[in-house]
Length: 87
Image (cartoon, rainbow, N blue to C red; front, side, top):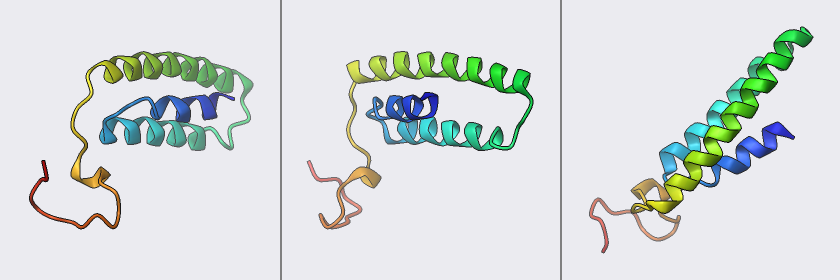
């Protein structure tokens, strides 16, 4: 299933913004073609999705090589919110 593969590839990103971007773009693209009945357009969209999946997987692996600090929005709930970063 292409949709599930795209969402799984989003989990490869350590960066919150990239992770959510890939998931959001995947969801939006599938919603756009939800009601489409033209088989040629669907096939073209499927091929584009496969290319996007390859790009997302490659970029996710590269992102995994260069981990960065977690963002403030990624901190767990219940840990207290502070304007200062804890080190």
